[in-house]
Amino acid sequence: MNTLEHNRFTDAWTEFGLRIERPSAILAISAHWFVNASLVSAMPTPRTIHDFYGFPQELFEVEYSAPGSPELAQRVADVVQPTWIGLDRDSWGIDHGTWSVLAHMFPKADVPVVQLSIDASKPAAYHLELGAAIAGLRREGVLILASGNVVHNLRLIDWQLIESGFDWARRFDDAVRDVMTSDPSRAPALVDHGDYGVSVPTPDHFWPLMYLAGAASKSAESARVLVEGCAMGSLSMTSYVVGEFA
Image (cartoon, rainbow, N blue to C red; front, side, top):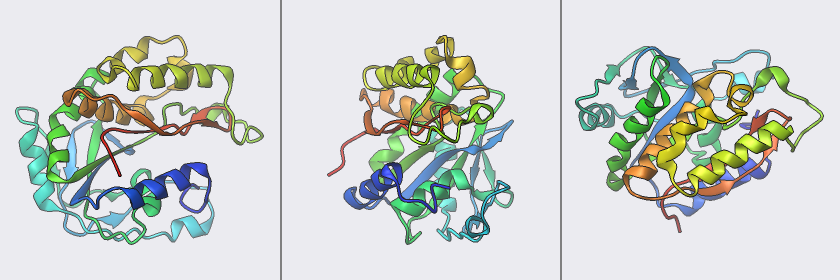
């Protein structure tokens, strides 16, 4: 629903898009391409994927018609070697984990977008290492967008807690912030935190953070908070930035 809303989180994403230098392309890691392989979308014209149900028709009508970049996809596959990443030329596209954010950052959809899948069979350390492997693409003008939620437990949502979180959600969110703003290389150890199980019942929304942590640790940087906070009790909308922006 953030695609259709304007709140302090979407306002932060909009401001970020206005303030940074226009990227040459975007490499997105979305919680919603969670499969048993590492793949990168390599089609010149990716489709907009509406991978959800039960939402207003207006959301299903959103089209984010950004071009793809087979050249960047091949570049991604090259820079991570000897790790294998397959080129996906026809099965995926741009899912709502990506376009719900980019609709605010780059509403004209005029920056090429490539998506990198999350290999569901791999542990946190694998995703951290892959994030480190793609970090050099930032020097080529590529914006790496990792899209998920630090805390994501849909079963425990409380619709009355619009802009607050349960105690356990805030504790885990705080623990993640401490790691990301000091030593992102320690991010895989967060799976041992006492509130990890309830905050991350499935890792699909958490693994994107590992890519950002890996990119930060590769360049010996820490992350900065772009906007923070919990919502509906069991979600964290905290967003991080690695690197400088004007």
